[in-house]
Image (cartoon, rainbow, N blue to C red):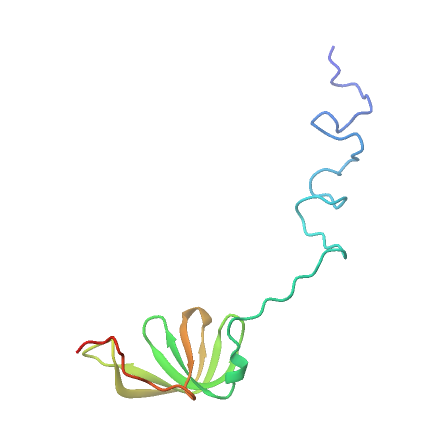
Length: 141
């Protein structure tokens, strides 16, 4: 007969096991310094929190200009924001496109009031105060 049914006291060592390992000491155990899982030991060094690239808090309650994917542009008072670049704008005005040339803005505007902007659709944020529009030096007419 085979040794298959006999108990020899070396349970768990047949498949590359370890004699010091007890039942349940394999994968997913919380013993030792193993890979996997998220054991936070007090000895781990803490990483500093990542800071946002944009500090929009200095533009709170100031007028900003925002460009979105799809070509829309608005100006409004920044009332709130979060790390995902979701914005809350008040007294918002949309700058409408020229119907004959969609790459240029027309003089027409549309009042939108309070606006909540999704961060993933924001392309550009620019403060209106302290910046001025100049002629494009590369535009050939």
